[in-house]
Image 1 (cartoon, rainbow, N blue to C red):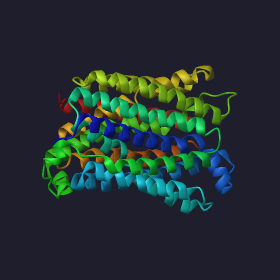
Image 2 (tube, helix red, strand yellow):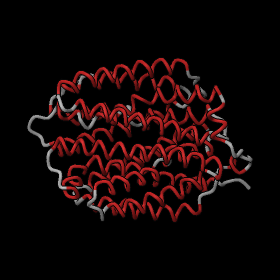
Image 3 (cartoon, rainbow, N blue to C red):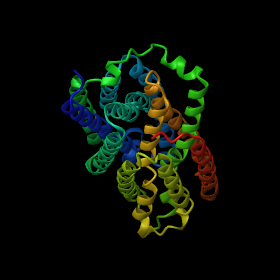
Image 4 (cartoon, rainbow, N blue to C red):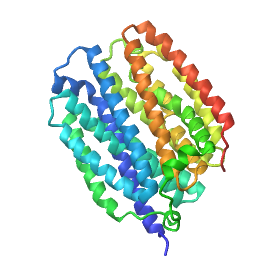
Length: 388
């Protein structure tokens, strides 16, 4: 007896709630990093706060890299549901623990472990959806998944008006409740019926075609990570009278609106994935090169435009990745894609940390970065197959 439609719906709901928490936590630091760093560690200089945030962000990225590879392999060896069940438990424990430390290295260590736990939420959930549903319904399910994530981010903004500690408590407790619910998630029929080889990672890194596909897909996703890494610096070149805190909240609201629109639109392109990627990149290069010309009063509209690359773009790439790799390495490959993409953020953060010391340096060099990632992504999209 295979998995029923009711069980599929239950699984989809729990996956969506998990990604709600994932996106929620990503937004916690973006919304409240200024308050966290001031309250917990006594740092008050705005440049020092931003540099500290970039350091924390880099270690969180390391956590994502470790977690994606680790839980990617676990998902291929022991099942997708098994991986996402215990990953969110790790997230919940470390998120609650981080509230109680005033030691920066310990806080960074806890946040690193938090992101080890969060690393697999999107990738493994997307793989589960692809394996449970038809291509058309998988596109719709993935759009719903991402939209729930965005709702998590929006929720974090509003809870952030209370306090950053309330944000952490909500995330930790919510994650634990989802962990309990995931005891009842079942694996897709495809996984149940297949004896998955135990050497999935070896197969991934020794097969030349697998390596080529993973490299191309990783280069295609770089514009997305360049966007989410640099966008929190862009308001510095837009605002005149507005506070940076208020500008950041408007940035996120606009970005999330664009995300939802993009993810829903992407579900219509389940037969034309490459076309959607080309259209998204056209928007990316257009909006990323004009940030210093945007008037303060249009900041939210500008970031709605920026947000259009943040929703459907990674969704389409996840579906392409799942379809390009055999079941034995699919979860590892999909998680590795986002692990390598996240790893690129460490390099982006290092560059930005240097560039922001001189405003004109960031202004000029960031645009060069956007152009390079755009060209590389276009070349790789041309070469990758569009699986129907």
